[in-house]
Image (cartoon, rainbow, N blue to C red; front, top):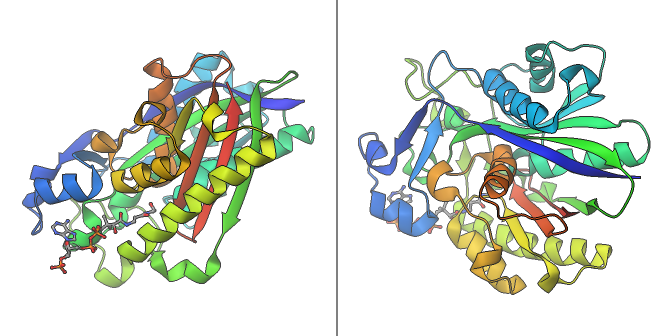
Length: 325
Ligand code: UT7
């Protein structure tokens, strides 16, 4: 018995900030941001908005499309590093938003790889017979964690949530294989040393530099390319799938240049690679499920297609899921 994604959903904050908007906050330019990252705009939470509400919306959409009632879920697993509080978890807040109780709901903290990690955990527990229907969410609000005077990081991140409903199913469709990796020795390449999402772009009290995202971008860039390529090869080999059999590659949207470099190394032509970084920026754990939801909406995925999800982020963490749709 395997597990299959039967529906997806996504939700974002109300406000989109373009690169031009950011030129008012710091010494940057639309030209630099587009050419170095591929980003044109991103959604950012404002005061009064809640990531728990946004993530609950994404989950509700996925459940409605799947025709699964919230009360029929067996678990909620959320990839996030942006829970509003140290605890409760974002998963428990989503559970409350969906008005359901008595099922396990928990967060997985793997930064940008959070959704890929959560999907692997859901699949493993479903194969073990623990759960039949699971809501898997990736949600983050890293715009609330940047130092808005640091142009090296503030332009990169956006907020949002993506979700999918997974059900157990016999047959050869669904998750074929997943692989997760971490490299704790690289922890200080990307870190945020205080929790919470209360500090938005319009709040009076902002994070100081020490509490904001700290990133060694160029070093991280090289490791991201290397690890995303390597994990792709390993997960495909494990599933007995050739790289040329992949119909759609759905990578974490951190930087267009990272995505292009990984795709080139894997021999994947641009039409087999899904990107939406131009409109979302780097939404951390939300990036893969938002991309997956848009790919489905745009008719880029058909029954029987081989789809690879792939991410790398703070931890460092990286991982991939190979799926037959
Ligand atoms: O989601 C987790 C995974 N994330 C990643 O893997 C991110 C990986 N890293 C990257 O994507 C890239 O390293 C960045 C996009 C973060 C930076 O791009 P880069 O080409 O590596 O630029 P850099 O940091 O080497 O900076 C080059 C120059 C610097 O100027 P100087 O010192 O050479 O005069 C920066 O100050 O570009 C400058 N710069 C900017 N200029 C205008 C950096 N950020 C900006 C900016 N606007 N926003």
